[in-house]
Length: 217
Image (tube, rainbow, N blue to C red; front, side):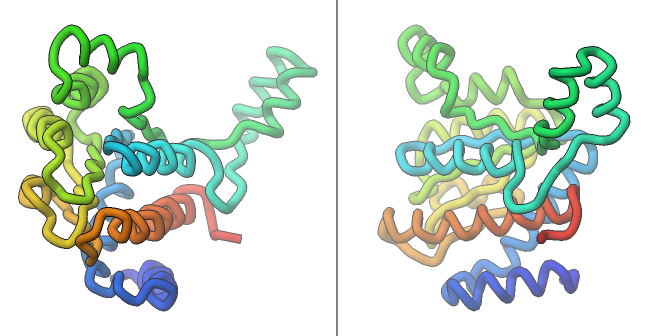
């Protein structure tokens, strides 16, 4: 394991000792995401209930700063200022670089139309079919690992050549065997699994930011 990752994982496990059980899978998930973003891919995320909120949370951490500044390049800043000296200067100061992450739970018009017109359990699969491309990653969040709409999406992901990270509870359910990496939070009660999911995905976001945008402050 890379020293910088090991140090951050050690700190995480110091605060959440039970995550020792998923040390390697967290590391593997990070490497998969790093490779994806390094090659121009994106992250597509889905979950239900509290896991839907987690999907939006993750996207928020990746699409703007998590902890460290992410300024645009000087070249892009200059383009903005040339187009509009006043607005461009403000945008050059305030825009932040992103790692593209799409929460599939956030598109109400599309999702409700598909649910109403076609299939209530196929909406994430439809979105993946529309948004996804080979080299992307699908992060399926399911505390049981058996959410049918997440499993349907995973089938489409595999057919498209999209790699899968499963974030589940201890059993992993049916989702874990389908995934390239399965992070099985070592709890079985839904709310306890969710309490561990947050520090896991915060770790992933933190490491991605450090890798692509510089040393964490």
